[in-house]
Length: 384
Ligand SMILES: Cc1cc2nc3c(=O)[nH]c(=O)nc-3n(C[C@H](O)[C@H](O)[C@H](O)COP(=O)(O)OP(=O)(O)OC[C@H]3O[C@@H](n4cnc5c(N)ncnc54)[C@H](O)[C@@H]3O)c2cc1C
Picture 1 (cartoon, rainbow, N blue to C red):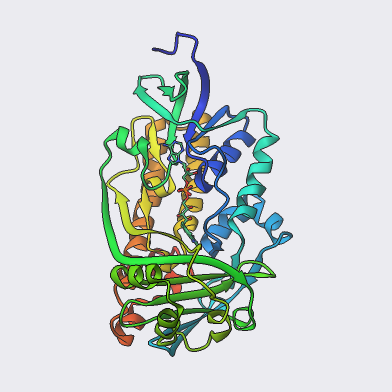
Picture 2: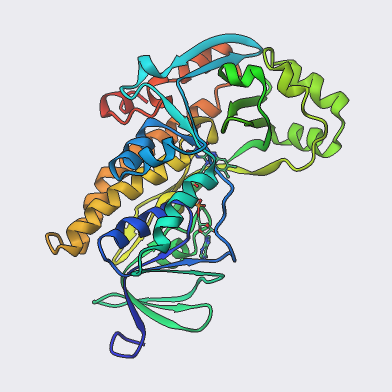
């Protein structure tokens, strides 16, 4: 296959319709670029992250999305109370740690739907669901892609925004280094309680226990529980509340109202936790974006934020390429230079924090309020 055959042509083909893929498609489509998004699932996933930190908000604000989200069912918050072994050990105040002074909790589906609605109004963006790539062949002029439907398309640039198990990454042979954590986390929504309304609380304990409670809108709250893998499996699969609740009460000391709402251990969503970073972000005309290039421990609340920051940055460099101010190689290497070290340092921060629960001192020393509130200043990140 080559560009001269009758393949449909696009400026950019994006594999994966998560936050990174959808946001990039909208930004490029707003500049009249012809974009194809391929999503392997039959529908766009509307369940996921709900914390937007200042670094992610900055990007959304720059492109006018934040102002829109503020009018929707999202919450602005500014404090986090932190506990170790049940003792209150720190309080992070965004007003003191970050110029923006607050973060936002916004149900993932609201963020995605806000962008998705915009995409549907742009005629140069085509979204195909239940579709993925089966063959990728890079040439001098672009990338020939065979879809799993058998159709061939041609694009100038191919973006792998297909998450942690990226098949685009596998195709490029870009090496990714994975470290799986001996930890498991469980996520569920509950009706909001007064302790959650009052302040966000993060608890950890010396045995690897973790709990994080925060509102996601006016009526619902997120309950996140974490344990070392063996303990988590025993507790959650055993399903005995008479064992689980006393274990949680060993380190959760100010949230009895939310613990009182846990009536069973079913329907908690869970997934393996890992640190991952690729050795590079691009090869030729193919670039990896967001979780296709990295994964961070959720205790930082920054995975989606990094994906949003990556996307805002890539859009700047791709625009310069499409204006023909830069070659594609210059654009991709400029992007990588901007993002790689920041992502690396924030991922390392998450790794240190996730491995620091053993003693209160170690945990407090590892908790960096500036990085936790998503400072991207090199003077701050270089201390990690
Ligand atoms: C339950 C949960 C809670 C989280 N909470 C937070 C939080 O509060 N704050 C935060 O910042 N981060 C959080 N994260 C992390 C955050 O959700 C991710 O880092 C972020 O969604 C990454 O976005 P992405 O677009 O790069 O990848 P993804 O969201 O993984 O999207 C990838 C997309 O590609 C699709 N896809 C995969 N393979 C293929 C293929 N072969 N072909 C076509 N499509 C494909 C997938 O179906 C998916 O739609 C959380 C994650 C989870 C799971």
